[in-house]
Length: 340
Image 1 (cartoon, rainbow, N blue to C red):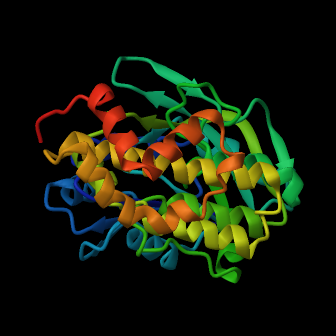
Image 2 (cartoon, rainbow, N blue to C red):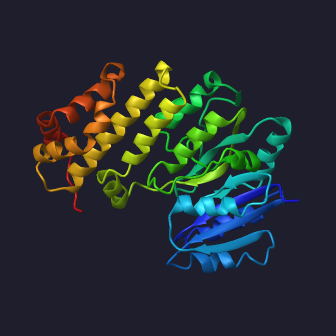
């Protein structure tokens, strides 16, 4: 009996994938299949993964490079389990991870999504717990789901100020497979950023019952923000996801919730300001001319923000973007440029 289908989207992670797959093989809950989708890796990732194929629970499927969303979707198409579980190839899990989540499906029979938190591996020899919420809870309606929606847009909501990740990730969860298929849920390959967050926004809204466990058995490997990540921010990679967020907020009538409407505006303001910052750090163009150019590219998103409901810091960031001369003054005294 295959209870859980674990989907691992694999792309150029030869350094970490062996530890990831070994942690799955050591699970105390044995009734799972591990579906490894090699997304056109150019290193030895697939070779490392193939060493696990002597265990009949592991499968390796190759595809041309199409991105993490397409890889996860491909994995879902090949899944046979009652529950879907996503694990990233550079992360790993505790031996009781699946057992703990599966037990929750027995005690919460109506739940379509089981959620949990994580431990952070900062490559310092320690694992640091990061609990997304203060305690376990169930959610069945929009009011009870509000903390989930809020944290999708504000990763620090109900978390410590130095939180690294949040509830919008696809891992640390079980999704009922038949329910996912009935709702036609999938990851949007057109989104280069926040595709998992947007997937969960739809899933959280559509689910009749969700359960969050005050348990951390997924180990998330923390890496510093790379120059490549800054480049993607600078290129406006988040714009499609921000537009999709507004569409879903309207579709699900969540903008009528003042708390969520404010969080949505704050999220757009913060991400767009990070785009300004990234461009300033990566470009030799004078901040004033840069800000004028950026204002044109983000103007549609800026116009959707209700300024009066932003926090004090949000208002400052908004007006710095709204008025290029203010941003230029701020940038000249705040941001330090680094080499490309």
